[in-house]
Image 1 (cartoon, rainbow, N blue to C red):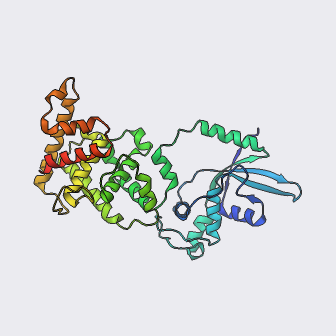
Image 2: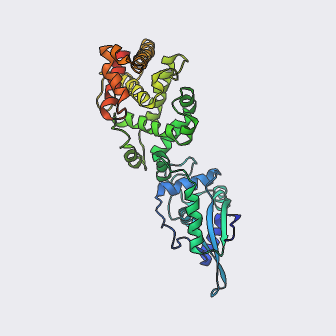
Amino acid sequence: MRRSERSSYTPIDFVQWHEAGTLVISPKFQRRGVWNRAARSYLIDTLLLGLPVPPIYIRVTQDVKRRSVIREIVDGQQRVSAILDYMNDKFTLGKNIESPCAGKRFKNLTEQEQDRISQYSFVCEVFYGVEDDDILRVFSRLNTYSVRLNDQELRNGQYFGDFKQSVYKLALEHLAFWRNNKLFSETGIARMNEVELTSELVILMIDGIQDKKKSINKYYAKFEEAFEDREVLEGRFRFVIDSINDAMKGEGLSGTEFRRVPLFYSLFGAVYDKAFGMPRDRITQNPRGRISADEIEQLGDAIHTLSDALASAKEPEGADGVAPAFEDFVLACLRQTDNLKPRRTRLETIYKVAFG
């Protein structure tokens, strides 16, 4: 089989091929386009910002009867279809984008913005004269050497709306926090584990404690088109993280049991409940939107007290020495840690020890 050649093409090329009838976007071995407007808008926004996109794979064949070159999009049909449709004014850009072009069709963009799209240089891998079975072999081997995507990586390719943009922004904004407190390894961050946790914490603020990770996709879908409370919740998220930082007085959580994600989830929830009140299963009666300096001090003491109790319980025969007041907390930290009941038990204990 002949090796592919790397070339660069622009949307202008795609338009010209399409108008000439020499571009095949949905060959028989490709899935049909399934992208929604949010996904299409996200791609166009990427072009407007000049950010990279994955390569497009093209097969070139000869149409003897028409005496023309036919180009089939082997991989990248959703991208090419979105570009063609947008340049033909078939949809407006959604609100889930960074560039100031939301709500605009291609014809409504400035000349400079149109050029950013039409002259964007796509890296393309081009196969000449290869058969279907050779193309299928190529992608079979590519998939063989690919790492299986985890749930958050799958969400990254499925959702493009306001909720996703919000949690990704918060996760990136607090990258130093995740690293300094050793909540995630560099490998975990590369696999978007911190984004998944941020998603769970935002959902916690919206709708209270959830059972495991079952509901995450539901919220990504629910807020795909609009996330009305985004700014308020982002501000509250930052407040909770800052409060935890203040409580630890620069020491961080890395030396405590609360560096474990299940425990951090409950710690975040307890602090949020104290300041703003949980949507469901609220403990605080009068959320004030703030936490006093004394309460921050108490929170730091509670983190150390509960961490020490759990660390002691994990020692050989240590469970026999756990104070009765902490027995349920310790058990909730050691078994089925992301189930609803343990999550609620941990949150209630943290709240009680920290805030009374």
